[in-house]
Image (cartoon, rainbow, N blue to C red; front, side, top):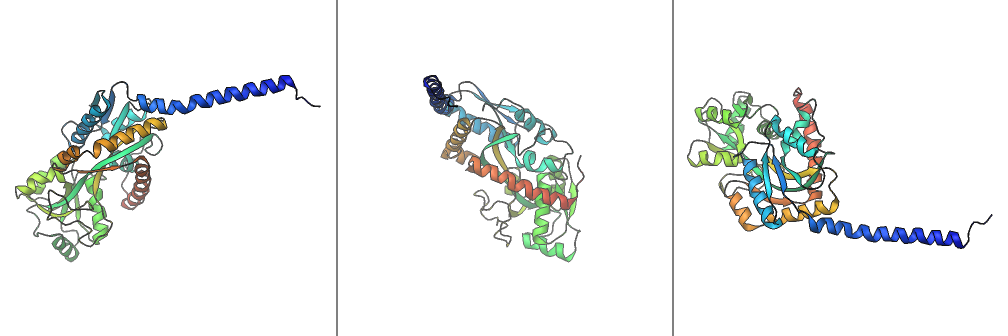
Length: 334
């Protein structure tokens, strides 16, 4: 039985025309979303208190984006629970690009292995937008260490394992993980003395109660310049312009070793692709601005843009790497 005929043909043509009309509308939608974003204030949340290194970076970035977008870009500080509160709030926000988060490796590739229950999945609940730079870590020694170079530390630690103490900002925190990776790379064993944060650890380093620690360059820089602590090695892949005489771990014979706190911008999963591209492209413009770079580099930051795809790869790679490391450390989840 043949159902073809004039009426069927007309209906078929009508459906095709309707489909074409929808397609024609769909293509400009992406361009429209990209060209009109933003048309109201954008909020960047940071999971730490005002005045810290991540807060400094966030505010500089917000100022650059505000100038480019012509709309307010406000910074919201939401400290607590090692930045997981801030991360959760953005992960649950509307995926429209107006709620962003300046995140670090702590919230995305460390906390999942320290918390029994995390109110978000960093690989599925967040949209990577761009990395914007890092805070290099530096290995420093106080008066409790009898040596002036990294080789002195290795030699003494091999001669008498677990007799040299080191401070960190807490079990499983960034400075602890940096030291664990360093001990494995150098095949040495030190004694861990965990603190609640840098503010508690540094006084004991300065007093000689602990010998060494990894710290951030912006925090250590004034103390190094005052001669109160001695830099042994820097964790970035390149030497710091602020400390050109301090060797990298790579130069000391540990290729591939990197110890930094990277920073990136993410949003809730589900942001439309054109808006993802718009935000990423504008972040690239701000981060590569010489004035923006110079201001932050002088404070000890490393400033380098990394796009959306690169950021997503980094999250997956470091997540897997830390999963293996934390399994070895056998740190109980809280």
